[in-house]
Length: 52
Image (tube, rainbow, N blue to C red; front, side, top):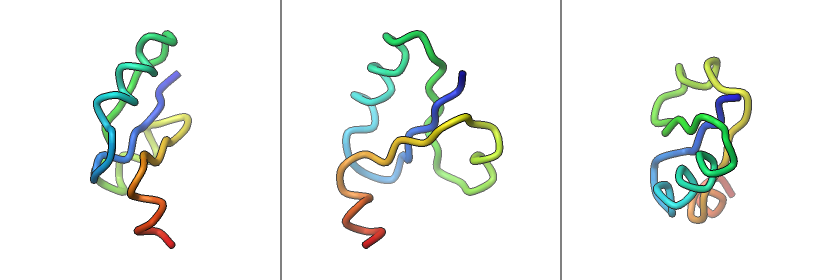
């Protein structure tokens, strides 16, 4: 399983470590083209404020 972490701001490295410890592949996502390659997306703190 590939899980993306939106890598624009926030605790990206911490999320990536947690995903890898859980046994999944972590992908830092910086471009919309990457979304087709992942099974899920985590939006770390800060991005949710930006989206709003």
